[in-house]
Amino acid sequence: MNDYIIEFKNVKKHFQLSQGGFGRNRKIVKAVDDVSFRVERGATFAVIGESGSGKTTMAKLLMKFEDITEGQILVDGEDISKIASKDALKAYRRKVQIVHQDPTSSLNPRKTIKEIIEEPLIVHKMGNQKERMDRVTELIQVVDLPVSYLDRYPHMLSGGQKQRVGIARAIALNSKLIVLDEPTSALDVSVQSKVIDLLKKIQKEFNLTYLFITHDLALVKNFADYVIIMQRGNLVEEGRTDELFLNPKQQYTRKLLKAIPVIGKEEQAFLDRIQLDDHTISM
Ligand SMILES: Nc1ncnc2c1ncn2[C@@H]1O[C@H](COP(=O)(O)OP(=O)(O)OP(=O)(O)O)[C@@H](O)[C@H]1O
Ligand SMILES: [Mg+2]
Image 1 (tube, rainbow, N blue to C red):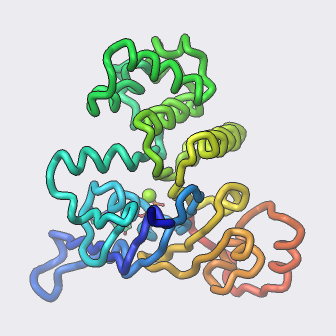
Image 2 (image 1 turned 45 degrees about the vertical axis):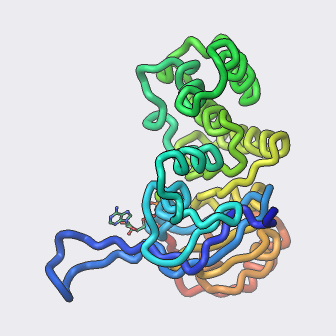
């Protein structure tokens, strides 16, 4: 088996805007522009960048919600642009799941928590009713929620609890690759670390690979093994998290690091030596 679960090879996604003129004047947004990277199986791989840098677009390409303009994406060594039939797409969806940024809008308000977690099992025709119920009961316990919550509706849960349901659903099919698109940015800071702890726990338990999209560098430091920094569709820097924090090569990365409110002594000593002209970063 290939050591790399994801490979992006010179991936481009250009959006053509319908308004904005004809022919030569037609506007193109280069959301992802010639991006290459590889993700090791079992790793937490962070994609960092300010708003509009192309992070969600990369997630959509990987999920096959959007097709790439140019290049190649391999998952488990398979070129995902070759997935053409409905059945093949369905099989692919068992492999890759996503946890969305906002748990409130991503959970159907009219369904119970049981129905929400069970849905992927039904779609993928997994087990009979009793087996599915057993699996749903197991999953809610994996994400540390009381079994009695299965009869509740999403609005009866807190933000953090809803995100736990989103995580339970994402792992329901035993998918090994999970895309986390800013999974904690809609949550209170106090809840964020608990959700991150849960993600770490289940990663170990089920040997998951995470593609972790965020603009929170502080979070990445304690969570991700590897980081890439995106800016306007381009990959500007990449490296092991500990190395990148200690020795950022690009000015842009240094700016991002400077913007972290609390970091360790070593990094602080390094950053204190860096002079920056411009401290303002929009995230
Ligand atoms: N369907 C689309 N049509 C046209 N442009 C798009 C489309 N989707 C994304 N874009 C543009 O591509 C760029 C990257 O968007 P993307 O959503 O990937 O950014 P992001 O890094 O996820 O930002 P955020 O941190 O705000 O979520 C933006 O300029 C965006 O406006
Ligand atoms: Mg986004």
